[in-house]
Amino acid sequence: MVDYAFARRIRSIMNRDALEWSHAWKTSVVWNAERERFEAIIKPGFVNGLDVTARVANDEGEFSDVPLTNYPAIPLASTREVSASVNLFFQSFGVVETSEPTVDQLEQGITEVIEGLPTDETDQRRLVATDLVLQCTRPSTTIDWTVAPFETGSQATFVLGVKQAEQTAKIVPMQEWKPIEASDALSRLEGGIEDSGLDECLVANVFFLSPPGVGIDYPVGADWQAFVRHDLFWNAEHIVSGNVSPAPQPISLNLAGVGAAANAQLIVNQILAGQNDADAAVLQFMQANEIKGRITTPGSAKPADFDMTARLDPPFPYKGRS
Amino acid sequence: MSTARDFYATPGEPIRPKLAALAKHISSMGGVQSGRGIRKHVYKYGTSMVSDPATSAFVGAFAVRMSGDAVTVGHGTVDDVVPKIDGDPIDGINAEGEQGSIPSLVIEDGPNEQLRSWVCVEVLYDEAKKGIAEDDESLIITHRNDLPVKQEAAATGDPLRIIKPLAMLVWQTDSVVSRVRQITFFDQRVVSDNGTLRLAESA
Image (cartoon, rainbow over all chains, first blue to last red; front, top):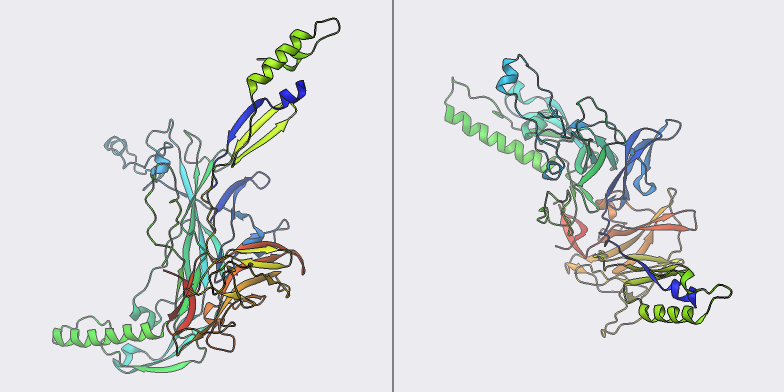
């Protein structure tokens, strides 16, 4: 009877937190004590229903592309200081944005201010970051000139071809990701800017928050805290549009005046009219023929409103990409 | 607070006060029952109550579940039409609106060389009608181990057949599925992208 009574004595009541739904690309960052580095493990996301890979080294140092469904540990080695536009979430931890050099500093002959070093080092923390990027390959347009546009001033000819590439998707850690900038149609037609055949989007920023009061040369280590801000929440589709036919096509296009600077010897209006027509022809041609890719997901591109001092990621329903 | 020792009588000690104290202790505790969402763990030295609040777990459309050697697919639509497995709608609701049994798709083929395969929805699109063809084979759930690399290359001989992967089966061996990874979470619509038909998330 005593045992019965004691077994039914309430010793604890626990209220477990409700777990949020774990979305695709959800990234965990852990410290690998053996290799002394942070590593990212990503919940598998898919592109066109296929596995996405990450390039990692095995114990023998041999690199291979491992599907995310096998949970590779992606090393995060290369970081950048975050000193401007510090997220409100991290400001609440004591990270401050770097100030401009003061008059006193300048008068004392200090000519260099190291970015990321707070003005008051006592309790402030450093913030460094790295990016995880989804990189998709696709075929790209190639243009080989037979008669270049500015040799004749008109009726330029070239061969339009396709540089074939397998459509693959991989996760690439980058020190700082910047979107691939679109170049103007004329530059692409001239072949001055080669199509990389890559489409990219940010998966997540990974931030590392230092202990208080560390110097600029204090390395990222086990005593730093890792935080992840996601930018991709749904499985993606990589849609490639344009003529991906491998047959090269000889093309003749009247490009007189394309992109040419106004010639002072001629009537400006006449030149501009001709130039505009030729520019429009280039733009139209490129839009009709160039291979383009885009990475899309379901969901609205605009994230739901949320308290940015309390959390880094927007809540469910997660934002998408159009 | 009482301890178990308080209720045991040592040799030569009167037992009645001990029993009275025990009876009082038991009556003061009352019975504790666990309700919905509350788990009650009874151990030798006490009971723990664990509360799991309802989560906002998201399931979405076309949720693929594996049981034994067959999969079932949760409710989902393509152009507002429910796909079928062996002629039965995947949600088990027949033409009269009555709930029947949920059909399952037996996985007969194994995985590919990378030990992967896919549960897909396949659409036979009637371009003249601008809609899904009307027969039992026009909107079906299938199992494939050779998913096309490009969505645009989904046409398999017939230019109007459109394939969308719903979930990936990750196999441990050639005969054992270890995990199901959901790929599609939303109802689908047939859309045209530069003349190529494909399935995309319903707006």
